[in-house]
Image (cartoon, rainbow, N blue to C red; front, side, top):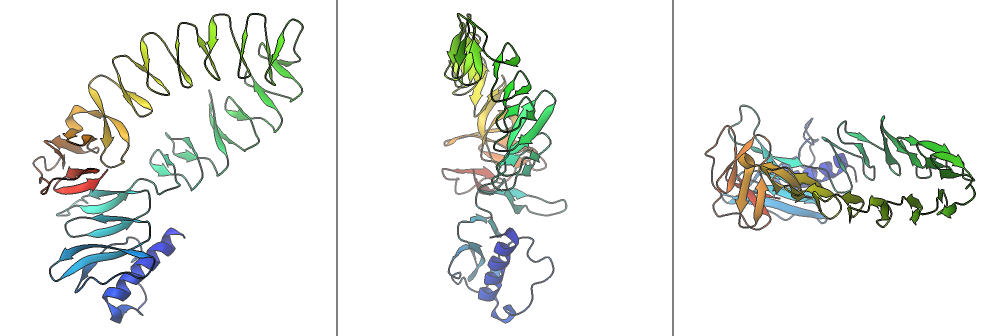
Length: 333
């Protein structure tokens, strides 16, 4: 279902349930840009296939009907439906007296690529530029940039080889030749075949189709210096530690797929819900773990506050597990 179609169904269901006289009226221009709850005299159930998203208000409620599986976001006087996979956030537009709910992150099936979301099934090629490959393509990175290769096109240092070829030192070799000493050729005498593409010299070790030198060792599918430690696809020196699938300096914190330098702590980002390296001025420690306030906020006790309101509201009652406090509101993380 497309986003516009889903929003149209949810918005129409809400209007029909809460304001029967308006059920046959055409929607106002721009009314589908956001799915927001409004006050009603009662809080009736939603149609089949939709879920009620509401907060009590007087004798009635503020409500919206969210398509099944969507995320229900609530604040003190607003409800909103966000796509599956998104998280609930708040933002205060210039001149507004209180913040509004905003849907943050990418929907389920979409990959975050810088500030953009790739189409469903499409991988991110370059987070810095927000470039995405098409579905079934894969990023191919090299010294001169990144390109996108088809499912049968081998990647060769930033360029795509033809189907049936393989990469040899940045060059595409025909399938009947092997890669030996950086050249496309047949295996010379006194060498041994390694996999389907390499020729190893005497004293070299065949490692999953690659040749490890005399001062190297095989680490699963790649070669590391004998003095290094195997660490997933990486090799850690004696001044590093293994963080699952990558190396960090011994004075750094392991954090997701990266490392936090000294002075920063690994914490869950309040808006994005992922681990990030957090400076001390934005770090909130709760009984459920460390939270990193979003850019533009500061840490104040056990909550995050906008920089413009450093003594913002506390959350009462306190937030539960899986939530964090920002200016009096408990947000899912």
